Length: 309
Image (tube, rainbow, N blue to C red; front, side, top):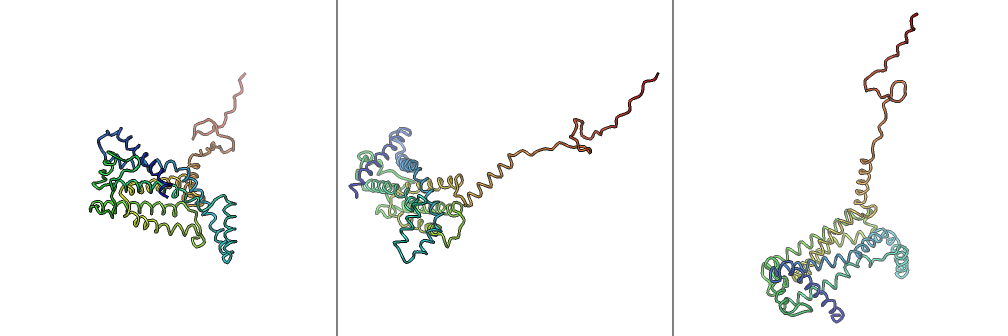
């Protein structure tokens, strides 16, 4: 496995060093070393997530399709509960008809995973002062000494050399990661999903389970990875939270609370921009208004006098 992924790991190290050199050009080649390494990890994350925007769009479409199909999936499972093969065939037929599948919603996670492990492997080498890819010599020494709030970015909570400040920083970052993931999942469930009976919606039940399971996974994994990897992870979570909020507000799922709110906002804007028709005042005879000032009454015409002889 490592033999297959080693070229990717090396490529990630070169990208990381590329951002480091770019920041060196901006800040100075021998100044702000720790800040340059921290920002390099953040820029690596942002670059990766920017490239993955088309996959995110595809994920959103797949999630919406799976949510809409959930009641039909429930019916198939109930109808063919004693025939697994027939159940699978009907499920595949349903996916094919609606041009979706449950794996499409996992694409961003699957694509990110190799980069996550690449960064983990690189920073693990930095912690042990071992060269990897483009990080060697003076770059390795600089990365090894890089710190965030006084804690080396290559160390983790369980590192044998980790200090109390490192452990505290790790816990704070894990809490922030878990909170951002919880908020992201919560806003998807409360604003971005159509209103439907949760007892008959497998997708909604899965979303509820993930709401509490994912933060727990972050807590268990977070103590075993370096602060540098936590920087990558936290940046990813914050990006996802902002990106999803933008989609929910600007392009919500039909039938969701966010969709109803957007439609109400559009309707209110349309009504406020429509000019009101102003009717011309009418006189008692029912004819259109004259150009006379308001309040001025029509005076009866005086008969013409006959000329005297």
